[in-house]
Image 1 (cartoon, rainbow, N blue to C red):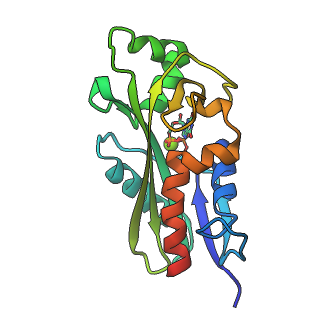
Image 2 (cartoon, protein in one colour):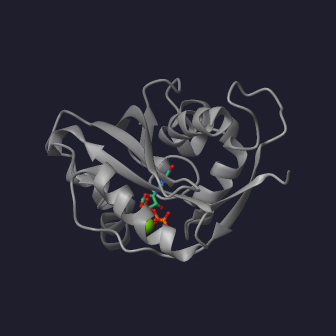
Image 3 (cartoon, rainbow, N blue to C red):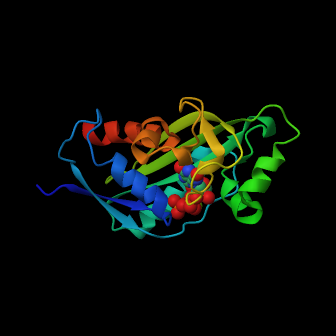
Length: 197
Ligand SMILES: O=c1[nH]c(=O)c2ncn([C@@H]3O[C@H](COP(=O)(O)OP(=O)(O)OP(=O)(O)O)[C@@H](O)[C@H]3O)c2[nH]1
Ligand SMILES: [Mg+2]
């Protein structure tokens, strides 16, 4: 039987690169034949105004399901950056903060607050071949710091995970980032689902 085809709809090349890497091995990271073939459709789907990250991901996935043939599995992910001092904002709006303000002003926003705590959150929404929806979430705790490391992926250079030994995501290699990242954690859960269903 040919492997099941699963489409990932994202217009973000950096996300795609990480996801391909994470899904290229089995759930316990040992090399394995992947039971699916990953296909990318680089579309920019509508993202609703919501604080609830699952609701955003599900809404995105409902559109995604309309972009593939019936009976084909499809998934999306939405990634948020939540500041403790702002009760979780910018959250899913970080993309627009980044576009309008840039990294330096985002760091400056937290200047009046002692609490630099933040959470990186990836929420995956998956529509399986029967049209049933599933969500998987991964969270990494960290702090917001002055930009360090390459600035080619979003806010990687201002997010320092608590478990990284003082490195920002941008200062880590991809293998190490994926081991502790919001995306790595969400996709490990998704991977377990794919291998067990
Ligand atoms: O430093 C980062 N490390 C990451 O690991 C990461 N993952 C996402 N992002 C950025 O955060 C916003 C999410 O928005 P987002 O989830 O809607 O993504 P997107 O619109 O770029 O793609 P997609 O919606 O087509 O999948 C966008 O600005 C992304 O560039 C990251 N930045
Ligand atoms: Mg998006």
